[in-house]
Length: 431
Image 1: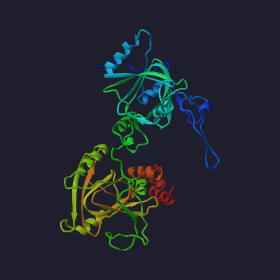
Image 2 (image 1 turned 30 degrees about the vertical axis):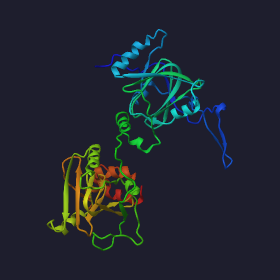
Image 3 (image 1 turned 180 degrees about the horizontal axis):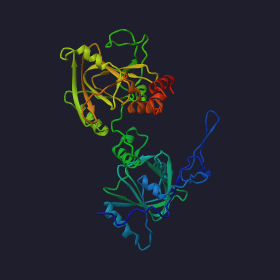
């Protein structure tokens, strides 16, 4: 059933970009003399906090962030409750209470409003109908900047689940508001300074719906047992370590800056690891998979095959490998076009981005069992670097732009310039 009382896109509601540096309230300045002789001035959260000139935010802009608004005139005969009841019925708000916050009557008033002002989300909508008084809701915009929303008598405001926000009274120090709930009346904040809040399901759902941003529930790791180092190009067999002396380690963070994603998901006999794998597949839209088992004893033409894997190439899709057993090396190019050797072992999941030059080899154990994941049909199509057109492949150029900050404008006619040579020059210059 469609709503009969739609949220408003116009009305008396006022909102503006929050200025975090203005309007210090003289009555509540806290000056702390620090050891260096400087002063820390704590500003009053209840002031207007406007820029000069004021940067207004429209009700329509708030709606694009998921904020819903009605202006329902509060009257002595409670005629307004007819509209409230209709909204409750249509939006399935089953419960309610009324809060009355006033400096004179609320114990520990200043501490309480500081608690309200801590940035947080909820796993349900926050619905407030202002019966009297006033206050401010601060909500985050798409640039993670604060917008201050001035809620006054007769305003009904709904903040979506998963939206970062905070609340404070204004300098009148009084508000009376009806709180509406879909289930039991409760106020459960999940503060932003708690590590798990950013990956909370309701936060991720909010970002997907209103920001068009997909946040994984299992983020790739920036620490873990994965080992990597700069490759020493000696004449040794490709399966040897190829380390410099001393070894030149490369961190997981450095790999991430090149676009390499990493998870360590312990492989267990009961296949509990598949729960994490399935979640990653669902969120990254990996629809297909297979398992490869490479072993000297069982793979025909083993030595020739691993030489083929070791030819430098790119793919037009991500290369995703989850190591179920055994081990091997992925070599990837850094921004200076040097090789980095990544030692992949049991329980490591590694994703190489489309367009990244790389190669693969087993190590001296001559055995690996790996799950290959694919967005579409399972296939392995290498585009070797020695082929002239590979350097100008769209996915290669997209990779260079995203991870190296290099933009190459291809010439309309081959005779105008050697595009591949131009790309190589830019990489060499790091430009």
